[in-house]
Image (cartoon, rainbow, N blue to C red; front, side, top):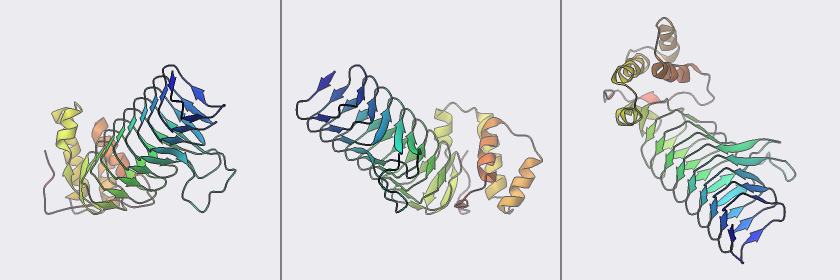
Length: 265
């Protein structure tokens, strides 16, 4: 274990093996750092924050700060729970939950580049890539294997499905279904075929997802009609994941399909 002499580490902090804490970093009393974690210079971890193993917290990052929510008040016991092997680059901010015993959660293997913000009660899956300055408001749910372009911003209570790819510099207030490409504000333009292939999804399964996509976005049906039509057929697991996301009740509604472009193979 290596702790720089200028770092401030609370007496109640729980530190795993081989933890490294850099100059002027602050680690609070209620923080748990798993084995092999690195906290770089001027980072701040405060409140009830739990990190698994081998996470890197970059220069000036802040994890566990109070939420930006009028409903929150000092004394609420909430936190941040993070898995293993994540990298949080410079000035990433992750706020703790806003309700009693709630948490903002991050899975495993995520890369959050410079200036990314996760608002209170966000739920983030595994192996996602957030380019610089992506901003997620409170209660956003993000699946796994998602790529978010730089400067993309997401409204509270939004859902983003697995294996999405979202263009940088865009703003979103509608749910983005799994496997799709988010191209312009609240509109998808087809499927993330490259990402699906790289994930090892077979050609037949990709073709079935494409058929499900066309049923929802190219058949002329509204969402309720498309869901009803899909229920009359049997689907494999990937297409089922897409259709279940579509069918799930949402606070935000669903992104439109951009009809000027065909779905990708």
